[in-house]
Length: 158
Image 1: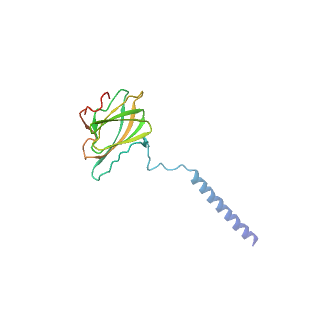
Image 2: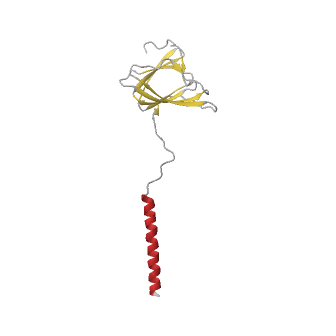
Image 3: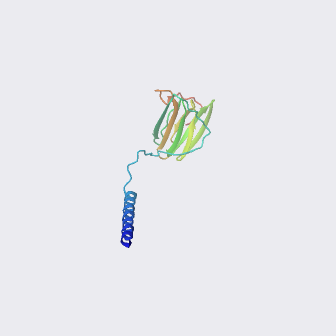
């Protein structure tokens, strides 16, 4: 009887050691490649008071925009507005609002919103190129997310 008990204990020990080896092998095996990867491009804290409601049936476009020192955007607007994150550098936004000139400066790590139809000019008065990541919501299907506009004459010296 003792031999049968010893054999049973020995068999249980072998099975337990085998299971432990399988568990350890699976834990140290390389993981399969991920199915989904995400590469964060930019992130910023919203420092504006703008809002942009989204609308079903319109396009959403994204762009990286780089402007060298002394460069500028030209006067323009966006049909669905724009959500901007400053990745690098700083920029000055000249806005024409009801005949008044509004000036705002943004730097790396900040985000701001341009409202649909808002007329502005963006200038790089900094010491390095600025890099922006911009999302343009509510773009009419197939249309440009940017509309060039004439200088309204409200912001002298920009």
